[in-house]
Length: 353
Image 1 (cartoon, rainbow, N blue to C red):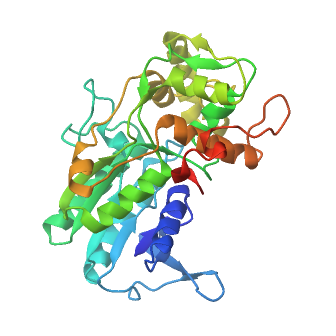
Image 2: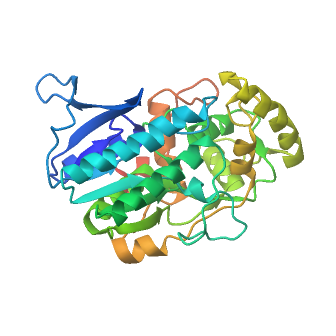
């Protein structure tokens, strides 16, 4: 399998799963610069990344495009177009040239924006906000056009992903926020977040490679159930031996702060991009993510792929929390005590690393 974005958090877990199951893998780094796409693969002997000519890819392979410029950053829209749209178009051309057996485009549930109905299924019309999700929707349209021209294409939309080896994502930041003596909660905390633990996502991607329909079919991948923001924060504090309960920050106050946050964001001040509670100004996207109710219907993936996520929010947070403590990324009271969660007690064998 040819996997782009191979140095990323999700791709590393996916590559591990492929190797464990005996699949041959070809990790690829790809860049689009000055109208030209560049590709690198890892040399099997030296382990170094080597630039690869466009004519040197295996035929009849499965291509999994995980690489992307992720998140909202103070960058011009052209940068997102180059990284997420034009590069995708070049990869689709390559896959067609080498007669790919299947092309898996990994997109995002964010392309559907913030619809007022839940659960959100694949049939809900897209309504992205922000450069990142707009560019991902445009990449989907490129893939659908390639599908109409005969390339076997499957599109996967993962929910917000978290898990071990993720260092700077939203969920690790929420865990660090919850580990403080005083924990602040955006809004009333009753809104639902629908996440997916990275091992479930890797399994879903493999199932999409093997079983996904190739007519441009779209699959939403999310965890077995959503949880509220308050439940997530309380679970972290309970596992850290801290009192439950967080101080709510009114949504209207957060939106007021987001007005300033957006202005500074557009002025390319990178220090304004943290989530509420990290001591910096939020953006509107961050306030919406932490205060609005949003969860997903994964019936299509269950029925057509046999997708069966097993990581509940509690088990997934336990697994990430243990990794963060072992990696020295979260402390309680200045100590590095290990969380005594189900994974440590051995009651959930499926969680073993």
